[in-house]
Image 1: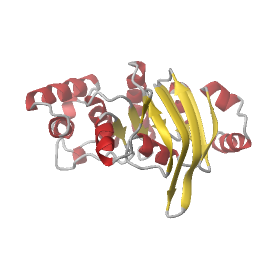
Image 2: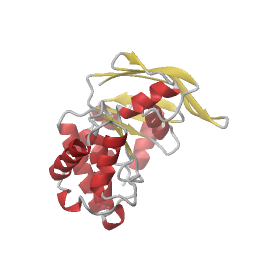
Image 3: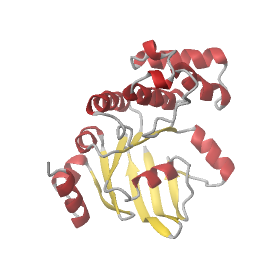
Length: 243
């Protein structure tokens, strides 16, 4: 992954959420975004996903400047996989159909190719027995794993995961984190917003701590967690790692 964020600013109703963020990454496969609630993590992720427009600044992905015009954003959204904390599965469709529908309607797959792709991924992530079940018939962990499979099915440039375990109990959380670790081990490029500090430390190549709309700290997991350089980072980590 090669990414450059320059002077990125975003506000909602006069409230500044991202305040001139600068970030440069190269040769990184997994970035974990951590920090206090309201610090701008999800907003940054949504801009990278092409779901929000910044008021100012630039984003460069693999040397290409993101174009925030609507036609260009539509193309960009088709090239990334996004997983939200609320699953966002179609409730009236089976797990299999939730994966095949965007492949057919958005990415132009034939019905046969879409089904083959979906079935292969469901089997790989041990979800084949759930293929014909609707979301209401699945556990929270299974629903989130189906959402991850759906994101991977489009062969994205990178995958964005916004607090994918926040609505899950500990057992289901472990189930989903195992899948994310497997995806990362395959060399996929990932952005992960998480409150799971142990997992961020384990899986990420870089950890960026956002607080007050700014990146307070960015570095290797070892550096950020063991030797934070800023008061904002030290204060946040002291609170979340206290117990």
